[in-house]
Image (tube, rainbow, N blue to C red):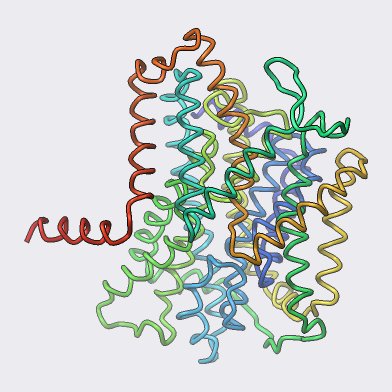
Length: 503
């Protein structure tokens, strides 16, 4: 681990990488502050640029957007009572009352400080546990990789969606999209419809930009109010908010642990972590503050937990190629674009790059604190933008980025196609994240499944003869059984377990 960090330091210690990490952090804060965008949209917009950068520079910039965007939503939540991102939904419970009481600067400063400390805590856990997890998984063969890929598909497509059936359907759509192109095993053409442009498959950037960026722009246009300008007060933030936040150090530590834990669970999200941390902080309150009326401890709990989630979510993403959330799925796609294979092989074959990415993550949280405090007036001014200026800018950046990847007009048509698909799916409340997961994990699952059958000469017993693979598959079966169990039986079982528990 320390060798990786030392070798990664050489890759990080260049003006280009440091500036790109700072740029990513600022960009993440900006898109996070704008309601409806968030870190996922920021990563998608900058994905084409990362394609032309060295691995540590490209991944460092994207991860910095992830870090900054996860915090930026607190600005809109505190000032407008509109969470810039779903992660900040719990922050407005006490952040907005603080702003109404004339403490908007303190609220934003505490949110940024707590996010940075929580993110650093999650980063330290990432540095220590991801290599250990990868070291265990480095002995995995094709059957184990297949089982893990199925686990990733189930955990994201099922757990992270409100509707199990809809999540599974969109996950299967992602698997079908991943099958388009040339078969990697025997070079046969699949689902190319006679078009040579599809022989290399559908570019993941075109799919992601279409599904998320173009469909979001269409939704914003459909909602109207393009000339509306929010009424936002001017805010100044000082570094003294760090000391205000440190008055709640035990709350900060506990919430960071909660966020890291939930982040490391594929399918769990920062929303769950932030509300859980808030509930525990409120339950442990000894009367010093009134939660829900402007308690500093409430902002500390929610913001430290949702940013600690970032480090936790990267643990299974990098070590096992199981994305912790939708943003991590796109980060996995970025690794593939940069010629790197996420999973245990990433640590054995590209340890210096992993070390550089770890350090870039920690540096991004340092920049989050310093630049977040200094540039808060800039991020607040972004909230005053009219939608008629914002939406065309997002569209232009998205389409230029897609075209610049391969100078392909076909990729633009694919982006428009998936933009229409994304718009229709969102109208009927189908989740989009499982599609990306299916595209990323589909080839991993298919390739390792077929290699396993080749090793066993078409015998399925190879998946049961290997203890680790059999255990992972058994867990997958239990997850499926739990999902298909009717809700009334689940509630009865939960009640019986509660009654049978310790009194």
